[in-house]
Amino acid sequence: MCDNGTCCCGIYIHSKNHGIMIHNLIEKKRFHESFFLLISTLCCFIFSVFRMQHTGSASYFFLNWNLFLAFIPWALTSMAILYPRFGKGKLSLALLLLSWLLFFPNAPYILTDLFHLRHNSTMPIWYDMVQIMLYAWTGLVYGFLSLRDIEHLLSKHLHSIWLSVLSVALLFLSSFGIYLGRYLRWNSWDIITEPGKLISDIADRIINPLEHPATWGMTIVMGVLLSMMYFSFKLIRNRNSNQMFIENQ
Image (tube, rainbow, N blue to C red; front, side, top):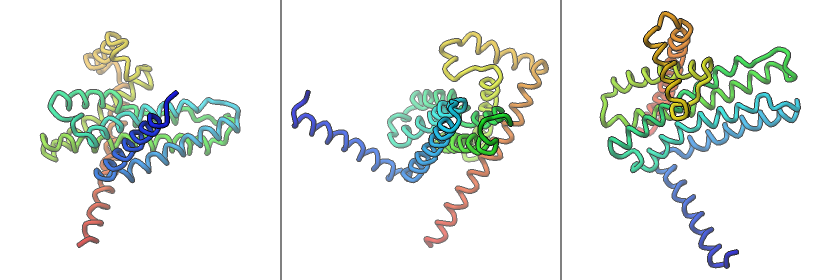
């Protein structure tokens, strides 16, 4: 039990922390972005709950876990943007990039959940397709926004051309990670729990690429797709920013 003074103090501190966070979101021009992602995530969850209630099956409920994993890279870079001390210094920035890279493939990974579409489902196939695409799009937005944050964090160290080159390389690395997750069933945290087996699988595909055509085929094709999608995303954002600049002249 706590007395009224302690409770009021706790509520005040809790409210103050929320106020500081909202202030940081507005100051860094991330409030609308965060609000949109919250609404989009809630829509995904509502779709999955409706499907589960309607069919009595939780077969697609795993998408919520996949979306949570897609949220992590955006959460990491958002912390670095909102609270610069987290990404200050070369060591801190390197740890941030490493942590981000381990989870980044989870953002576009949800695209491959389209493999689960079945005509014999208890729900119309169009509903399941829309549901998966909604999750996939939300995951991609989390991922692409976090990649933009990475570009911003590295902009002090790299020229814009090299940032674009790096982004493409990261998207292709992510595609390789998607293959590892979809077909070899590796997870982001397996680098800690089973590093030997994971590194062995990766090394085998690098040393003997001709023995693993499916690995590199999917990596290249998915890498091209993600690169086209990401730079389309950037083009739209830059065009909107330029339009706002012209209107304010």
